[in-house]
Length: 89
Image (cartoon, rainbow, N blue to C red):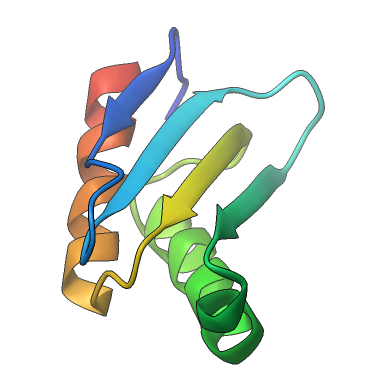
């Protein structure tokens, strides 16, 4: 799936995640994750993998994805990534 513009979904509130998806200048998925250091230290690798897997399941191969996590559950992360991708198409 080719991205034409930047798409955003979610909020920077507790229990949510703010995801921004944009076309990549370089091939592949570039994922930038930020948020509370305690959360990232404990779950950062899992969150990054979930974002990558969700993007690939939605046919995205080349994208720059940034996410600011505030303790979102997996189902919320997936929904936000999907919504941001749809808004970027």
